[in-house]
Length: 121
Image 1: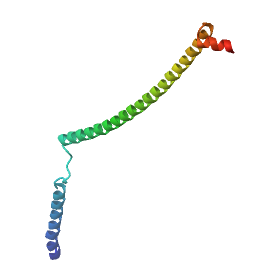
Image 2: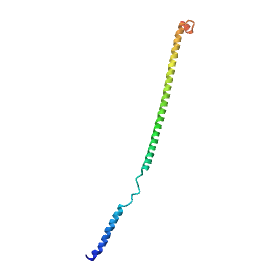
Image 3: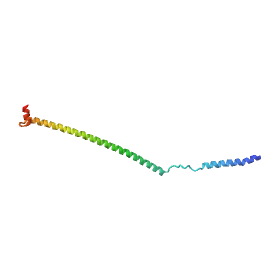
Image 4: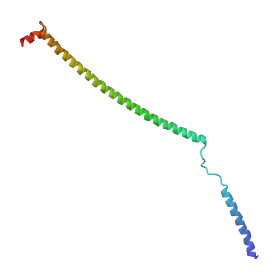
């Protein structure tokens, strides 16, 4: 071997050993800072999501119930008004019919105003 190759050999050997050392160091790096959440943290997060979902659903149900109650109240009021009008109309018709029957009976009974009025006609 000549002299220049003897000088290059230790340098090359040093480079080889250094590259092996860097490769091994790169493989043994610690894990990144972002870790997987623990089961407890996952359970807490799931619990919070469930509570939030329950609150949202409860608000929707309450709103729907209030709207339904309002509609039912309006429908009841309208039905009561229509029923009252129907009862009043039926009552008036019944009273008119009874008056007309009373007049016809009165026309046949002597001494009543209806009887005297019928005779004059």
